[in-house]
Image (cartoon, rainbow, N blue to C red; front, side):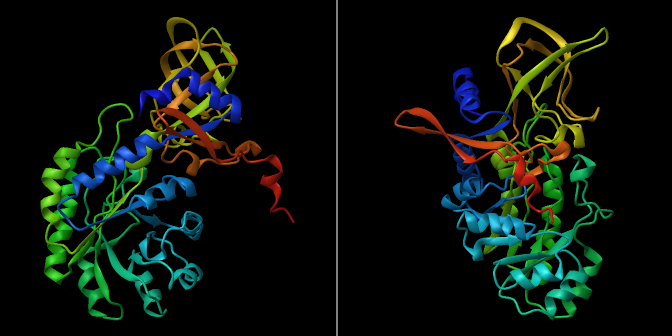
Length: 393
């Protein structure tokens, strides 16, 4: 994340202009990561896509589209976000294990690529006229060594087709299959699981004569400990892919998480005999990951009472004890009315936000450089209370 994005003056200007909670994204960081990905795969025929589940803001998706990326979707809602970003239908890859027949009928002649997740889904597609190119998602039974909720490549996972089922499905010859797809999980920080999974699927591709492959995503970033070694990934993984006519890549977290931060206002500092709580104006309604995964995000105090640090809990305003941003952190005590920033929230931040306790969803802002200085603009306004109840009949 560019140091400029962490400057107190800029953060306070954004907060005072658009209020809090507010997500802030760095255009500079996004472009840097796009460049890194293109460099890693410079020797292969890459078709990169951005996983819209990580961040569904059409202005963000548009940035990736303008830099040669397609889009990876898992719902009609994400398809709609792509259309607001003017993404070409033929550059949209449709993923997911629960595509409904209604969704399939709507998108069958729109999206360019479909990853079929099961034999049952194969049967539905075989009954419907479609212009899409089909891939079979293979479950390679590989441990991604990540959080169980985001590990998708083990045989007990709900995702993908077991390797011993491939012959039976392909023998039906009711669909033209272009290749295999593999995605073993998210936030993977070791190269070994990628190599184990991709090498298996490359061997399967050679066995069945496929010249196209979708290698999914899952690149891990540094929240606290380590991140994926990109150079090691390039050295060990890319050689497997050089003979393919097309390599589809689906990245979300790596592309956008480090480019985003969340600005929250300090409403109270509650001190008890047992613990000190810093109470913010947003919690798991704006950032679900700490409550759902016990996920770690670095928290910075923008305006502390003093330089002395204490063990504190940083919490939200919701009626849940689990409404927490950071648990037992060694931090300065912030001044009431000042701001704290939560880092690396560009992925699965806004897209997992919710209206619990009837809280409106936050605003989103992009920071960009123009004429040698940094400026910012709104890319999603704050939700109004009335909008939460527009579906009531």
